[in-house]
Length: 149
Image (cartoon, rainbow, N blue to C red; front, side, top):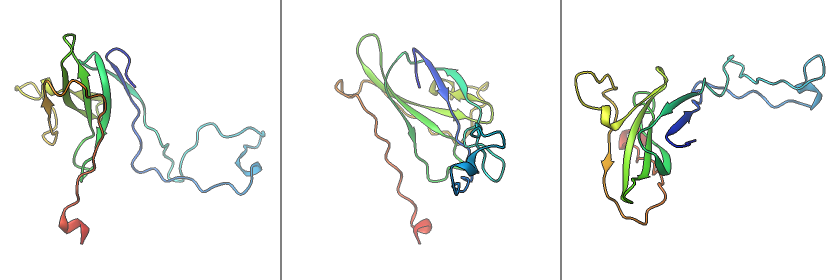
C-alpha cells in the first residue's frame, strides 16, 4: 500500500483462468510430496503480474481507491487519493497507472509537450474539500443503454 509517499502496485492478470479444484489433498502435491508454490492457470499465466514501486507526490494519504471504468481495455487504471497537506487542508487527486511501462502518471504531469501520458486518462483534482473527510468510496459507472440491451 503506501508508506510515506511510496506506492506498491500489484497488477492482476486479466486473462487469468483459475485452475480446477483438486479432487483430493494428495492430488495437489508434487511428486516429492510438497505443495505447489507457484500456481498458474491452465493458460500458463499467474494471477499476479510483476509488482512495481512508485513514488507519489502526496505524503499524508488518508484514503486510496481504484476507480471503475466502463471499458477497462481502452482506459488505463486510475487511482484516486484523498490526502492532507501540512496546513491541514484536504485534497482529492487522481493518477493514471501505466502497467505496460510500470509507472504512474501524475496529475501534475498531464500537460506540456514532454508528457506522454495516455490520452484516455481522466484527470480530477479537487482542492480544499470538507475537513472531516476520511474515506473514498468508488462507485461503479452506470453502463450505457446499448450495453445493457
